[in-house]
Length: 234
Image 1 (cartoon, helix red, strand yellow):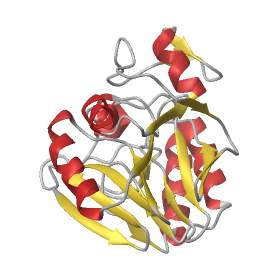
Image 2 (tube, one colour):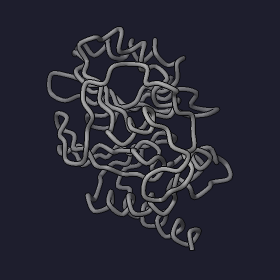
Image 3 (cartoon, helix red, strand yellow):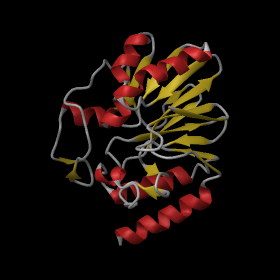
Image 4 (cartoon, helix red, strand yellow):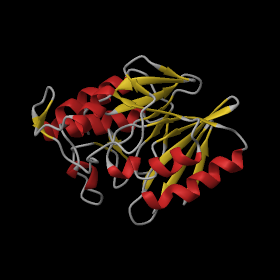
């Protein structure tokens, strides 16, 4: 597992050279927030990194519920029973009441959703909720219930699979040939374009994604990715 720290955010990457899957530890004063939980094989190393900080894990928050983002959730939750688990209300609806076609775009749901959510959810979160220093932003596109987290201290944004940087920066649904997998699990490109525009309104200083390296000062690259996605859509 590779680790990279930028300001208060540590990116933990499983299978960095083969199929990079990221989760993030955010240091927030005297506690930690874990964003996503990567693959089942990631659990022990994530737990070691948490223990090494000496800080309690207060929150486990999920950008969406695909298997490569909730893979270690049950193991980590059992190791940290006091950590509150949060996911978006829309994403949880998809698991409890799966539909062939979902929400506004009325397009098929894709990706590896669990048949049942593996743990008890402490809170269903929506746009504008605060989790420590992190603001919740609803950013559907990759999935109908995808959310992002904006760190109000540093203007870093963690977007899950709304965007990728592996294989080249792209909005989910705009296929990058050297890493096409996010597109395979994407619900609706048009919705993802609107969500990317929403993220850009926050003028992020760091872009952190589910697959690929973090990018500093990402706005110029986001503008190019957005233009490319709109061209593909049209």
